[in-house]
Amino acid sequence: MRNFLVEAGKFRLEMGAGPLVMGIVNVTPDSFSDGGQFFDADKAVAHGLELVGQGADILDVGGESTRPFSDPVSQQEEKRRVLPVIQKLSSLVNIPISIDTQRAATAKKALEAGASIINDVSALRTDPDMAALAAKTGAPVILMHMLNTPKTMQENPSYADVVSDVRDFLAKAVEKAREAGIGPGQIIVDPGIGFGKTLEHNLLLIKNLDAFHQLGVPLLLGHSRKSFIRKALAKKALPDRAAQDYAVEMGTQAVTALAVMKGAHIIRVHGVAAARAVVDMTLALQAAGA
Image (tube, rainbow, N blue to C red; front, side, top):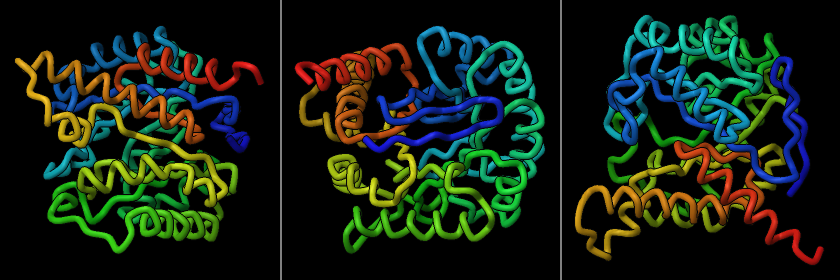
């Protein structure tokens, strides 16, 4: 794994010894995995603190669901959801907080409230002011691949070669970010698992994750509990939803282990405690006899 140093405000993120674990805090009523569970600000803060206690290295706070076929929320509503959570968490935790948004105005207010990373699923395409904001503030920005928008991305997604196509998209996004004045130490890429991909597309991207190291920037993988895992495991009938959810969580951790071996720098997950154990155990196995 190539080493990187990313400075996020007062935090220095050293990447290379093994992936950092980003814990997901969804302040939404309709996210695909935990929608509504932490919609209340106090519950979201409590959940963030729980994830830190489980070993999260970064918290990612979002107020707009990007599940397939979802509709956008207003900017005012997005800010109403996330800003109190970020402000409170930033006063209580000593790890960086990422704001998951496509809107520069939301990102700006979130940075002022205590966030230090911008996670833009549109890779700077939705809001023309986002690149300038990242360049001006020095905040690291995560650039993710997505076909079209969450509303339309799963309508018959197709690629000539999914690994090459996604890598080429991200290479252009990195170039655009640099041209906008965003420093090389500020850029992280994400192949966008589940964002305009079939089951086969997702499996091929994860299997060939190391191909994205050619981009020369840190690599994030966001695979946690996504529907492709449920589809991949659907051949074996399970008795009830609880058994299905358990299988999906185990499938998530199988992907986490592969991500470690493929050199991912950040993994974005719901279940931090399990991911932390998988990361640490995989690294111990890799180090044995070295």
